[in-house]
Image (cartoon, rainbow, N blue to C red):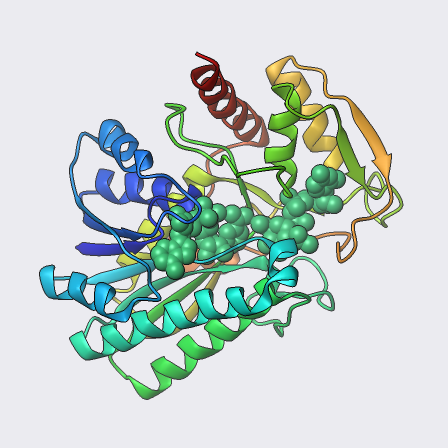
Length: 337
Ligand code: NAD
Ligand code: UD1
């Protein structure tokens, strides 16, 4: 298939591009590099030994995006491009709504015009809000607590409405849980600008000595050890889930949602202990109050993805900790040289 990958230079998109190329698909990347670097494109080529077209394209520019569909025969789209920081979204909500909603709207309008029917969209476990009980199932009601989360809820609704009106459309929303890890080569991974919000990037920055200690947000949750429980999954497994979901769209029209997680809950302390053990690095930690808005537990029921698209995770928490660290260690060394 010829697959347009929006946001293909980003953390998850770059790994999905590697999986797509390795599965024999052709890709075209559209990214404006607002949260990534063009260097990533070279790394994808190095890893796969394949070449592909790519565009410095902002999805907010309708004409620029439409031009790509004129130049290439696109069979399907995987849509990663979006802004993703929860705290930032509360500070600049209109930027988030504009970027994530308008970008998706442009994409859908062009796909409708060009009769490109297949789309895989990056949704998030954040759409389960705060009222559902774990493990989360796809049929549960959705809601959000911040503008970022609302963009995901709204886009899912937009895509659902679109498939109702377009009987040829085949759209899958993948609700990711907590992706961590990196490609084994150490060439691509998660390297957020500034001080990270998410746990694993924060842990890596502490391990490499850029931050003094890890703040454990909340020790009084009703969980196995009082700290927050999440469903961490390896980005390589997540990338593979996109290939499976995309290939399944050849057989299935309409709107579908799949959880992509391991189905296992891991606490903050378990993750820190595992990281210390597999990488042999002590991590200083301080116990703090809960982070506002955090829930106690989030993990997936993944039965639907296993049954319908034949997706199963292969990597352990140990692999995730080892590969996250390998990426940061390798890339921090490069910066120092
Ligand atoms: P990322 O920021 O690394 O990648 C997103 C990419 O999209 C970046 O390369 C960025 O430059 C690009 N982009 C953003 N706005 C654009 C625009 N208007 N036009 C063109 N390119 C644009 O993020 P990621 O972690 O790889 O996440 C990918 C998707 O998955 C996002 O939609 C995100 O909301 C979703 N998601 C991520 C997580 C996570 O933990 N990383 C969890 C759930 C869902
Ligand atoms: C966050 C986002 C969520 C998004 C998800 C994946 C918030 C409120 N939620 O969720 O919308 O879908 O990332 O991108 O930001 N923790 C610490 N110390 C830290 C950082 C985190 O103890 O420095 C704890 C948190 O309290 C939580 C766990 O680690 O229990 C995981 O946190 P994080 O990586 O931010 O992911 P989520 O909370 O799941």
